[in-house]
Image (cartoon, rainbow, N blue to C red; front, side):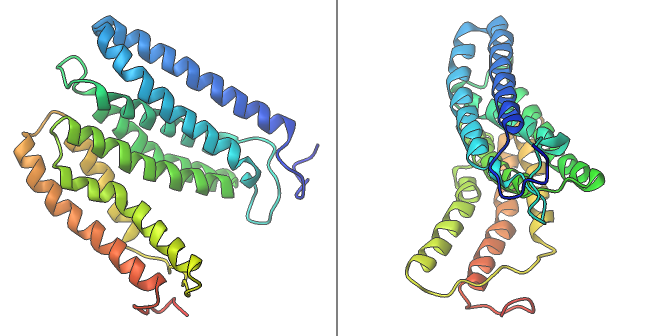
Length: 259
């Protein structure tokens, strides 16, 4: 079956690549469990269940959106491609971070959540560059990128709060995107107008800044009280952007790109 089969669903080859991704995820869990077991069997057990649950969600999300593995012109791509592979690795790293939510912050594992999240955040910059360079920008790639960004902003701050590295109110960032999407969906459900968001010069840099800050917060390099103060200052501009975006989609705030 050719890549030009634009009206067909995911090909057999594409589904086989999903299966390969699932096998790689399972191998990653086994290797992670085995490595943590060398430190403490209890830590390995506490880590493996949430990690497996998040990976299961990611694999379900991938199979649900496989048919979006198309170019902007609608051409179906029969392979996930290197850019999506990098994005899936990023998702695996975020799942590994989620595993530490039930693990006590002992010196043996204190660096692992920050390192895993930091590498995943760095890959966020790389996957998009790969897709652009090789001409394989797909709707699936954009969907995965957005979903894994949101997931990372949920699990990493949650671990930070549980470990005492971040204040509990920083979780407002974790839920802001979900609240925004729910509010927008609520307007559609009630038949109210929903306007498109224009391009923003602030949105992406703010997200990158939050990723860098979360990485620093999770790493045991600064005292927790200092991180808590910085978290409050870092949180304000991102929440302000979410509030502004809702005002735009609800028509309460007009921009040059709005109708």
